[in-house]
Length: 297
Image (tube, rainbow, N blue to C red; front, side):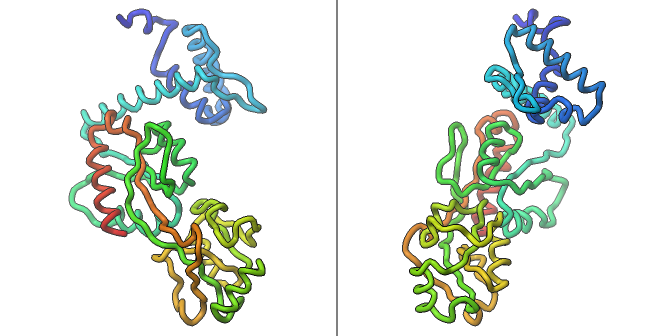
């Protein structure tokens, strides 16, 4: 049935892996880590795949290359296949599982690290935490280069799945160095005079409500960085309830304002159902994260 696929000039694991690595790197030299021998090998292997399938798999794009639509589809199939083989081998050898989890810096610092760094009995799975934004998380869940992701989006593209972990309200915090009381703070908002920090990986600009349409004084990645900027006294910031600044009553004015910023801010666990079919341990790990993180928040 598969004889024609696996001839000398047909498929091999090395050729498929080369396509996956070059597609991910966007450049043969980068994929080969500057090794001229490997560069030549990658080029030859991709050409052999193109000859076998009688279709173009890569094309030039600027100073690098990118996969064609056919190349992306073959890379997706290959990644799925190679991951399945890797998981099967780990299971046969009873190797430790390594689960890759992507999340924003706030969630990693406040919830994932305290949970996963706890002492545990036995070896159990290992974890690789990556601080990435929500767009990147969704893309990598599709590619199966992340196993699980923590996102604030309320919808993701199919076939990804979401389940809510926790929710908090956002509050607007204003240093008293800028406004001494609530009345002055609201006047500054009406006059559009209040400088603010935007945690770009946590909130869309359209979610900033009273600051919508204005340019932030400072752009940072996470709520943790926004809190640090707030505590310097020169900018206002939205923060979830669990990150309320220390000595809040003495040094800050806290406002509950109308609009999106007063709405519930939700964290969700996201995963690709294909992972659960590929890795027999992934369902247990998903259930562990759902139960533990929901309890922890």
